[in-house]
Image (cartoon, rainbow, N blue to C red; front, side):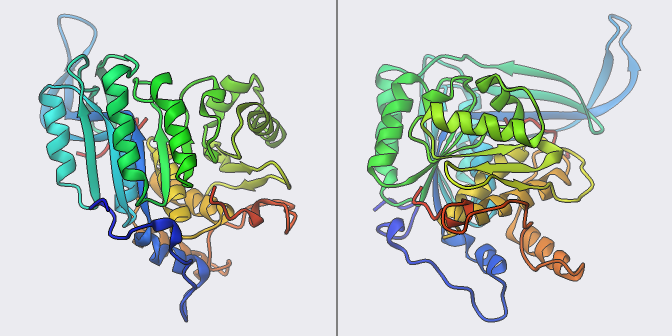
Length: 382
C-alpha cells in the first residue's frame, strides 16, 4: 500500500452519513479529509518578484522596479495539489521537472507541503517550467517564462505511467491537469486514461488541448468558457450556447459530463440525460479570478472522493471558486472558509447549504441522480 493514503482501497469506503446538528453540506465539508486524490499533469515553479515603482527608466519607456521581496510556490498541477491539501485531503502529485536548480527548489518546496506526496520525474532533456512575475503593488508588470513544450516520450513517458500505476490503487479520484507543457502527451494520455478506467477510478480533466477527443474516457471534463468555445466552434456565452457546446463535447469527445466554468456567470453542469444545471456565481466582491479554475477542479475531486454526488460536488466547487476569487492571487480555500460561507447563507435566511443553482432536473435521470464512480495565473500577495 502506498504511504500517501492510509487505507488499502479507497473505493470500498462506505459513504458517511450526516451527524446530528450538521447539515448535509457541513457534514460533507467536515469529511473532506477522508479523500485521497492523484494529480497527474504539468508541474511548474511560480516565482514572484515584488517591489515598488517610483520612476521610469531613462533607457526605455518602461518602469523601474525596486525589488523588495520575492516568493515562490508550486504552480500548474502543483497548484491543484496545493488546493487539494488545503481542503484537508491527501494528494499524490506526479509530473516532470528538469535536472536544474528550479527543479530542486520545487522538490524541496513540495516536501514541506503537509498532505502532499510528490513523485516528480527528472528529465535531463527539459528545463523545469519556471514562470517569473514582476509585481508592483497588486499590478503585474511582466512575466518571463522559461520552459520547453516538449511532449513526454520513451523512457520519460514510461516513468510517468509507472508512477501512475503505482499510485492508483489507494486513491479515490484522479485529476489530469493539462497546461500543454508536455506531460499529457499522446504517449502518456491514452494509456493513462485506460489505466484509470481499468482501476475503476473517477477521472476529472482540466483540458488545454482544443481537441477534446484526446480526453475520451474521462468522467468529467472541466473547460472554461473560452476553451469550450475554441474546441466546439460554438461561440455564444449565453446559457443555451454553453449547453449546446457541452452536449456537443459529450457526443464527440466521449466524456461522461462537462462542467463549464463561466466566470461571473458561475458554472454549468451538463450530463447526457436530464436538464443542465446552471449554478450562479457566488455574490462576492471579486478581487482576482486567477487560479479559480485550479480551485474548482481540486474541490470537485475532493468532494467526489469524500462521497458527494456530482451535483453536490459541483455546487461546493462553485462556492470554493467564489471564495478564491474574493482573495488576491492564487489563494487556496480551506474547510473553514467553506463552513463560514455555509453559515453566512443560513444567517441570511437561505438554505444552510451550497448554492442551489437552477435546473429542471429529472429526479431519475438528471444531474442529481449521478453518483459516479464516475494555469495558476494570479499574483499572490507578498
